[in-house]
Image 1: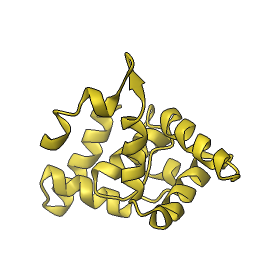
Image 2: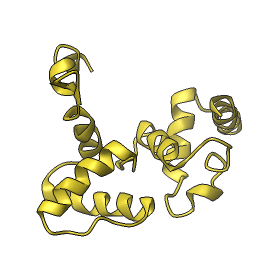
Image 3: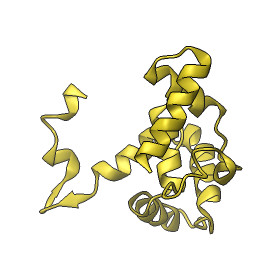
Image 4: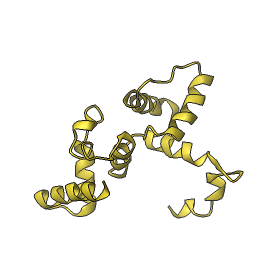
Length: 136
């Protein structure tokens, strides 16, 4: 899967005279959530919506991954706000993108924050990686 994604990005790179980073950014800007499964990267075996969204995020798109950790944390928040959890991953992403300006954080920040509040061995990831975070 990773080789196929890299191969497709290399094709974009060659066709447009871009470097690796620019090729990912170019792809991300043109990749759409609505038809993600029909996108050349979305069609690659093993690429699901989480991988697709992660790549878009790495390409500079302000969005979220609808993975189980993000969805679990957001579901808890929505329940406290008496809001319904979206039934599909695409609807979940759309909700997060709509909500982000209302809560004062970018969608990508909301996504990463959900990961940082998860705990490992009794410590939140934020505590566990606190010395590393300023370097990122």
